[in-house]
Amino acid sequence: MNTDFLKGKRILIAEDDFVNQKLITHSLNVTGASFDIAGNGAEAIEMLKQNPYDLILMDINMPEMDGFEATQIIRAEINKEIPIIAMTGWSSRAEGDKFTRMGMNACLAKPFGLEALYKTLDEIFNAPPPVKPNNANFGVKAPDTVSTVSVDLDMLNELAEGDNEYKTTIINMFLESMPESIQKMEDDLAAENWENFYKSAHYAKSSLSVVRVPDMHTLANTMEVNAKKLEKLETIPPSLQLFKKYFELAKDVLHEEIKKLGA
Image (cartoon, rainbow, N blue to C red; front, side, top):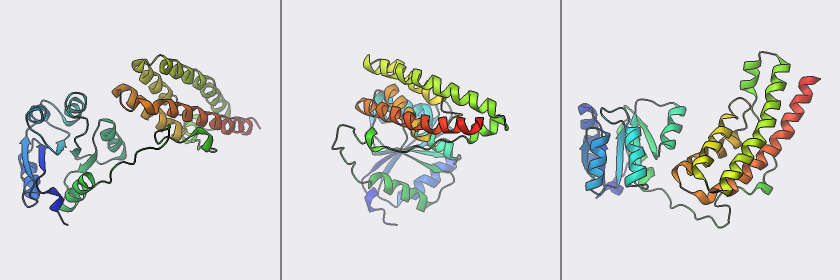
């Protein structure tokens, strides 16, 4: 693989294991990149404060301060833009989502080979520039362009174990509580109370754990993260409108389900 794109790049490696340090630096030695090594998250933060870097390779499990905590501090206090790649023995999708939520750009599951390392670095450094949105929705779908929604009742069916009355009760509780959650988010948005808003969005997301509407869950999670980090706040109003639209569509699906259960 051509690694010319790494020439002149300065990389900070946060890794406590000596063997892993050697493996990573050996891979980078031939690329023309320069690098420094931090033994834990706290050291990485201090080095980042003192030196400019183009990228951080961040181990997750380190003494004194782990990679998650270090990343949160970096994003909140030092640098919101520097690419951070997680290095971890975990490789599940759930953990992958957690890395993204924590502000990381990618993940390498250890042990990784040269090809995986170079491919990930190539994707980071040679990513196409983001396309600027050309409408007021900032990349969020307009509600009037959405006509269908997916509703996943697998978890409810599993919990109900064939009890249709129980399923009907849970669906009705969802239909009654979600409008209250939406109203709470609208009130918090109108007041620009972002601390309350992210809590309201989190509550709405939690309500989608049994009666699952994936599109709503994704929007609630994104709104929660942006409100908590005070980032991309301009995307929250159109996202909330789209969230409401998906709920209206989900209501129709769920009312039909209730009819089937009562038949």
